[in-house]
Each structure stands twice: as structure tokens, then as C-alpha cells.
Image 1 (cartoon, rainbow, N blue to C red):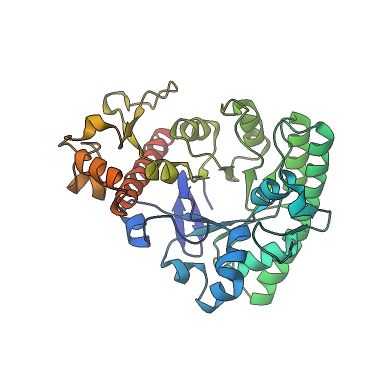
Image 2: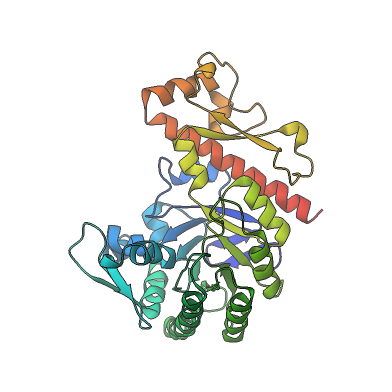
Length: 366
């Protein structure tokens, strides 16, 4: 592991890196060849969703996540802490959290699922992931201090149990250093600097390969919580990567790279693509990726002014959509609601994100 890359069982991961959300084992509308063509270097998948569908026994029968998805490069598996937060904290009738773990009944399902820190690690290890994430007790930045304090206490206790289970499985499987997946812990604490510091100190004492910024990274107005993100990064020694979980807006990614974050994941770029919002670099302002965010803009595929647009979405983009098709054709596909539109649009936005990572990496090491 170094400042500019992570060495993982399925290859080195250059940093900084944006990991598209392949939540249920697929990045919607594209296949693994499309992802490789767009320059994607790693994916993030979600244990909470995968254990329900297609299910852990099916994943095992199909040879693990890499064979399931036909993806040869690294995969990170999120523990599902945020999804459990969304399900239980906002809809208590679906389950409950305790110091032991989470018991929940997904909407539309009649069965109860028990997810403990140990079970989460067992599942992620069995899936063959390259980076595992400890189960955490997620909160919202605006939750009361007592709730944040309980979250930190529980998240630390769960991380300690997850680490013990991880070490047991690594030893049981006889994994050499180069073969073992990395283990990340999540730093919670909401908007409290004191709790963030306490959580980080505890996690560093347990010892992990990397860490994640826990909790929603935006305030109620959608603004990046820059001060808390900066503090959390400063609390972790620079040799350890810290993942800005859920950060995917291009301007926010650039801001977090400036703060020292090398890893990102979000469904935003692919969701935006499917909904007709395409990302385009403003080439004349690209130089230093200025903090004003004016180095990129949006093209709305459904806008009728693009009906006869003969140029590509971006003349400077080398993605499969821009190399072959006019913006007017993408507009046509969008209006038709044809399945080709989300594929081409997703490829374009992902290529934008991978180009952004190259630019940010070059600026960081320049």
C-alpha cells in the first residue's frame, strides 16, 4: 500500500479512484466490458442488498462476485450500515439495532434478517471482495449528541468484533499478505469534532488498512460538510487511505481530493446519466480544476435544443458514445426511452469521472 495506489488481490488500484456503485452486482445499463472501456478501475457492491438478492448461496454457486459480474478488477463491498440506517432509523417498524447487531425485515419480505459485525465480515469474505468494510451504526449529522455518542460507542465495538472475525478467517484460509483483502473501518461522530476524534483514536488503536468517513457528507442544504471532512482526514495518519463514502458530485470529489481523500463512490453519476444529465468538462477552464466548479457543466439530453445537434456530447471526450454518436442521436434515444440511451449515457458519465480522477491525480502529484 502506498500513497498513490492500493495493492489488492485482483490488482493494483491507482489513487485517487472513483468506484461506481454496482450495488446489487451490476452498474445499471452497462456490462463489465463497457466499464473497462470507460477506464473504471474498481467497483463497490453492497452486502445488505447482495445478501438478499441474488443471495449469498447463489453468489457462492456462481463463483463469487468477480465471476458473477464478469469483473476482473478490484471490488469493495460496503457493509450495509448506511442502508440499515435508512431502513430502521427512518422506519422503526422494519427492525431494530442493538449492541449485538441489526435485525430487520426488508420491505416486501416476510423473513427477518440478522446481521452482526461477524456475519457481515463472513459474507464479504465469502464473496471474494478486495476491500471489506466493518459494519457501522450510521447517523445523520443533525442527530442529537447522545445518539451520536451511542453510535460511536457501538461502531467501535462492532469494528473490534469485525477485526477479530477477519483475523480468524484470514488465518483459517491461510491467506498470505498479498492474498488477503484489506479491511476498512468507518469513523462516525456526526457533526461533533470531539466524537470524531474519539472514534478515530479508537479505530487507529484497533488497527485497520483504511478508513471511511461515516454519515451523510452533506448538510440539509446539500452543501459538503467540508470542516468535518477535513477534520476526519486530519485525524488519520496520511499513510492510511480514507474513503469519502457517498461522495460523487464532481465538484465535491475535487474538493475532497484537495482535503486528502483518495477514494469515492456514489450512484450520482450513473443515476444522472439515466435521467438525462450528462457531465462535460469546460476545457478552457480545466487547468487547475478551480474551486469555483466552473471547470465542468451539464448537458441535458432531453432538451429540445439538441434535436439536430450533430456534434458529440463533448468534442474532447473519447468515450464510446462521443466517438461514434451525435448528441442529437442521444436526444432521440432519450425521447424514445430506448434501452441504448442509458447505456451510452452511463458510459459517458463514467468516462468523465475516470478522466477526472486522472486529472486530480496528476494535479496532486504534480
